[in-house]
Length: 147
Image (cartoon, rainbow, N blue to C red):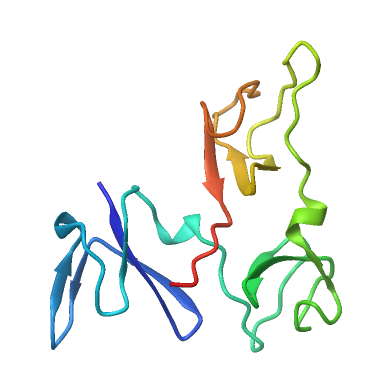
């Protein structure tokens, strides 16, 4: 179906149609413009990692974008800038997906893994997942969008 995506003042915006005083855009046109990028996937705002904001306090396991990288909070009430203190690069904390020699490792629902330079969540409801991320039952999360 596709969506239009834009970062504005540190917030990822996702829309199907944009009504602006100077222009109107629709995902049906399958075109980018006016700072909006067309992505040919059915995405929502929740598919993207939020940008770090100094005015907010983050809890353990929150993931944010800062300086084009993903950061994982290791503190509650964390208002420190990622890369300074209280944060670890997300790729170092999230487990890397792997299959054992027989190719069978099961991952519980809701677990996030890192595979082929992307983060994936097991989206199978109530079932462990034995498939490779990107094949079946996984949904990409913590997407970086820097428009």
